[in-house]
Image (cartoon, rainbow, N blue to C red; front, side):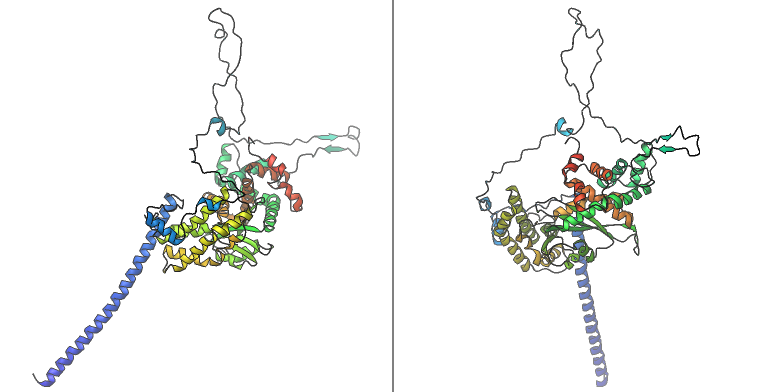
Length: 545
């Protein structure tokens, strides 16, 4: 082979090697990209698996965020390193209080018959089944005389709701002297009580029953329609919905706006929001979300008040409008929703129950008692704060004392919690990363509650007040119109105010419809219709009180 042919062959081999190297490099990049994609998919699969586990836990498991159990001395030493070692009870005792030693809680006994039905009327039925022959003495044949009675059995009877029609009969009178003249005189008795709604047969008792069933017991209108049919009445769901709108505008709105004004006068406010669906909203599809906003008073020792308001959006402007008029420096407890960031001149508190929930949901399955697990440590920091709060409540600490104790006991725990969070190296969208990020984003609000003993550690009161809405929407699913949504929130406010004061919800609704507060009344007048008024409490007490 000539030299030139060898050179050509060598060049071809070099070109082939270069092509192979290029192919290898390309394939290596492809492999790296595929490896990265597989890693991302594995991470996403792990996240979805964890979310599925969490959903199953929420649906079928216990909802209690339990503390980890200490298994050995190493775990106890780790608690000390984290600043979470248990504090002795002696550190919590003030000279002005006498601590009652803890006792083992006895198992609750089954309720007696009298305890179960203490609120019911008792009607006695005299048993008289003995014949005259049975009442004759078998020894001497003398007729026996009654010497006493005793109860031999007790039954509970239920009478279904009763409906009937009232006809107001008016008598017409004439003058017997003038009846044959050119100017006969007549007069008719028009003394029937005024209607609840113009041109409507609705009465306070019927309206109260409808609203109680719908808003207190979460019975949808279509089911109420069927129940009325069984009683012999044909009242369609559209009519009932119309009643709620009209009664709210005329009689409930004066009270709910009064409650709102009273909340704005307070220095401790709690807020929350939850989605609902409204089918017919301007410029929105039926599937889009609307919102219920909640305001309520905090643990300030004054009469509790709750208020619901419908809003087509979750916009921060709604939060601003709801709080317009509050005093500068008011403490506002809310969750981490950014819509509250626009509130000015307030002292914002953060909810440690939300923080704890994030960490609790980040605990890997089967590691709930492993305090070496970072998510468990996050839960334990929160649990320690709640444990202090529980002890303060048991000892009946006044707000001033509670503030002093918090500064002594809890401030160092919060500082340690923040320092611990800063040391966590997190990335991605995992549950633990979200929990740490959520905590870090609340940094400037974590210690606000330490400033005043009337501030709360969590927003649980608000969540409890939102629960009737969340339970109700599972049954009635949606509101048809904006007017209906506004009416629903007004009646929910009335129902939950009755609940806060232990009143009969049905009786309080009926009481307001009978006495008919109006927008023309002053706040001093509306005060007499509030659930804390003694006359209202007497009139609307539950049966048996």
